[in-house]
Image (cartoon, rainbow, N blue to C red; front, side, top):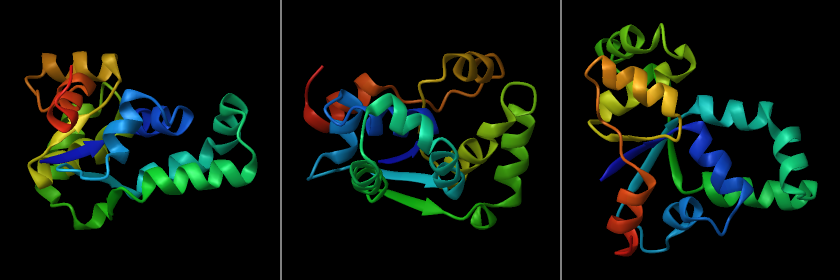
Length: 147
């Protein structure tokens, strides 16, 4: 199964490595392939101070946790995503949240599912008929056989 991770999911995993989200990502015998664009790394870097403040991690611990989580993700350069997928995603997200265009484009490109906690984005995309979301609970059940 191919899953594209939204930034908010990765932030949640970084902030609480014992959470359901982190356990899904860090599962050793993972049957799920996680993907994202390099934009995710940029967003982590941009919000590192806030993450550090919220988490209480030292610089070294924050580095270790970010590495632990991001090592489970295959990062795809957006230039490798087809122009058709990108245009399609742009048309979907332009009036909802343009910052999510790359994630939606990658989801389309790899024919995957999109894992996001952004309710406004989900609501907006559902109104436009796009429903390639997967929830934390669905993934947890598939991954660990639990609800």
